[in-house]
Amino acid sequence: MKKPENFETVCCPQFHPNNWQEKEKIFRNKLFLKDHVTSIFHIPLNYGWVMERDMAKIEKAHAKTSDGLVLTDEISPWGADVYIEVEKEVPKTEMEKISGTFLTKVFEGPYKNMGIYMEEMKSYVKSKNKEIKKLYFYYTYCPKCAKAYGKNYIVILVQI
Image 1 (cartoon, rainbow, N blue to C red):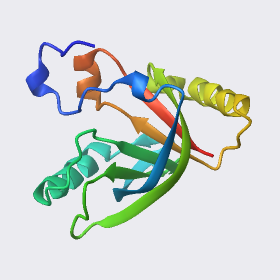
Image 2: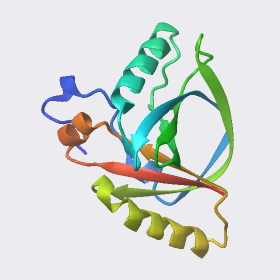
Image 3: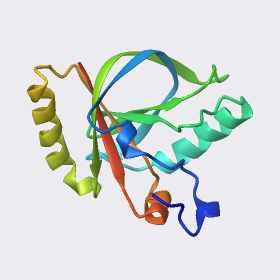
Image 4: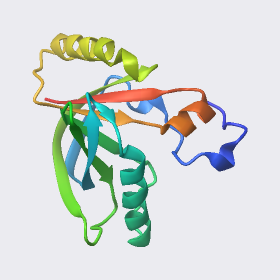
């Protein structure tokens, strides 16, 4: 994928789907800043504000990673936990380490197709004779960057 013409306005790192398409990823105590967003029927209300606040703390602590991995755990229709990968502990925040083996699959399209993506992911996991322990979603671009790049990638990670 080429850089968008308005590259200077892009805040999300360019995503390379081949690195995530139908892969097995192993996390060993991968460090994340953990926060929470409020939602109504899985539609986030304060995601942008939470991300801005957390990114300011991460930048102040010089803990930003180059790949920009942000995982979302849709814990209920009313909220989600977000996990922002960091290089080191960030003061005055909740930190969490994630370990495990994950199957990943990349989807490209609107969020409204999430039900279709979930069914595809379940079939993929079943084809590998594995069982789902936990799900995370990696929304690779914010809406502004998805528009600039011309793609809206979503990665589903299934802990097996």
